[in-house]
Image (cartoon, rainbow, N blue to C red):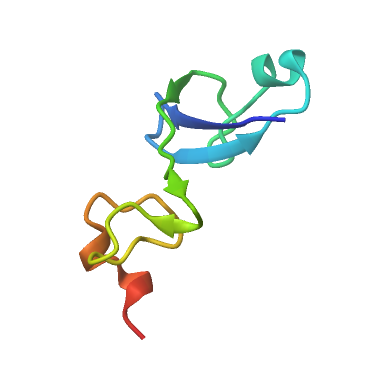
Length: 77
């Protein structure tokens, strides 16, 4: 079951949706405005080898969505 990322073309909201069936993807509506004018976005992902990040000297974003993992607010405690 893939998780798709969408952007609403009407209100600009970005959201993710777990899709169980292909037909369900076509029925997806924006959670903010309820419209179906959506654009599927490219998903980001992180690859790890041997259970560790490729670059051991730079912290990684726990959510995997930060463009600059060293400045991720989730890395500051």
